Length: 317
Image (tube, rainbow, N blue to C red; front, side, top):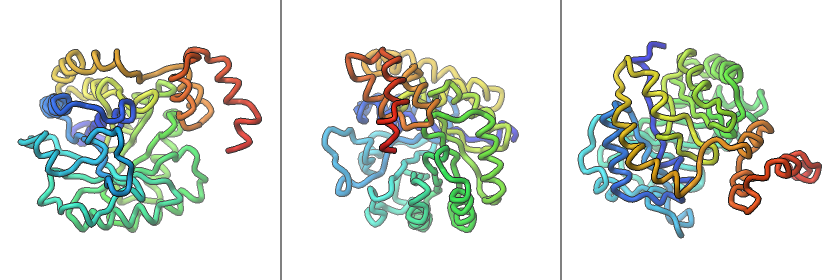
């Protein structure tokens, strides 16, 4: 794919919020939007649009729910960078959502597991009917049974969803795996535009994103300074730097990192770590590594390896 055809979707505030419970100040988010816009980034995912009625709001920052009126106060003048939000199955009530014409949001993304694909497509229909661009992000695809994935892709092909995402939820995939999945997605959902969302457990996030670009994936999920759950995501500044010859500019992001993300990184932890590498190697959710990093034994990787490989650990899976 020509690099001028790709679109960068920065999900720092949404995915990075998993690190600090969405405790970003309004100024922090506003500065991030301005820098992304000045860098030419196409979309900013400013958080989740879940319903406080369906999800415990205690201790969470406002980016966990993204009320339309609040977002208008944060971004009073929306510029070239569009706004997106993501929703989870069972945590959003579309009847509470305004049509796109009355909302600051341009795109609503639905995250779901294969077992919930019908529920996910139902949500897609409802947000499509409200006028939003939509994407479906199938999580934990590295754990999927191939026949189940093919069946889901064939349903998606006949749906109204605009963008279908290959998601490396556990950071366990390599470029050859991305190649296999992208080709499978194209074979069974040939009319859909594709996106890719990578995690950096094995330091493969950038390489996997580049593989996606080579194979014609159009939407690239990234985050500033790699901020995201556990090992984090493919870095926005890396992708922008790689694509600078097209329409992007890296400099506003570097200034943002200096001013905002370096200080934040000294208060909360994200990014590559051996514990996250181990969960990636074993194709497991990083929750155990995240928990381990909060203990006094956070740098004891050998016992953590033994725990991950013990019969007791895997007997419950």
